[in-house]
Image (cartoon, rainbow, N blue to C red; front, top):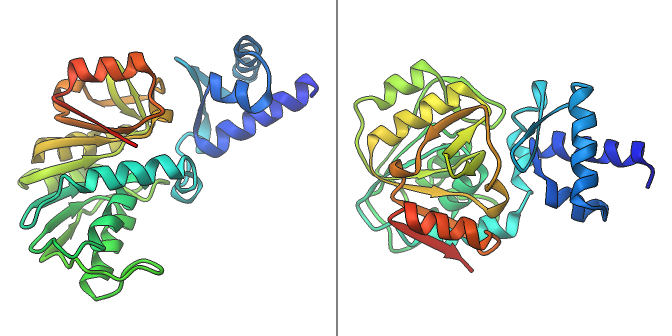
Length: 267
């Protein structure tokens, strides 16, 4: 593959995903990590992407990829994480969900469970709210019979992001006086400094969600580790439980074990 073709492929991957790891790109293109780093440096010099620790992020309108674009990425890992995270939920709990495709998969697991009742749900995610609204109406997602019908579902207001989340001052104000037992928190990036997102308004609303919760469970697949968004919204001392998958590196897993009360690794 010629260098120009390789760089076009790298740019495509970063724009579709919103971000990409050096080692993922090296494996995809069958080249060395050093070659990928040189290509990323060239693309950044042209203003076509932003290099971050461990990889690169898209720029401009592609910085925050659309929900539909992200939903098919790392689907198997996200499904395993959702299955494991669903075990944290008990009848009668009040739950909050941030935006993100993993949180939507988790919501689908919960609406399909027969043992749950009297749940209260708060979310700034339009797809998550829709999943629970349809369960309440007796309609689940495609091919799924809804069993759990929350006693109440509260969708915050706010400005809609490409990730189909509602963020900003209106969302923050809606969350200010709420108190939930358990928050499921998705993230764009995770590294030793904490969790981050490309969208500063989403970071603010995620912080409001964290303040509303007694227990915070961060749900993210291994591809998120090492990525850093523009705006941090949580240090690890704000996270009680991390639910991730077996693709996480040993050093990353060891870091989480030393900084989070509970680490759940989905098989």
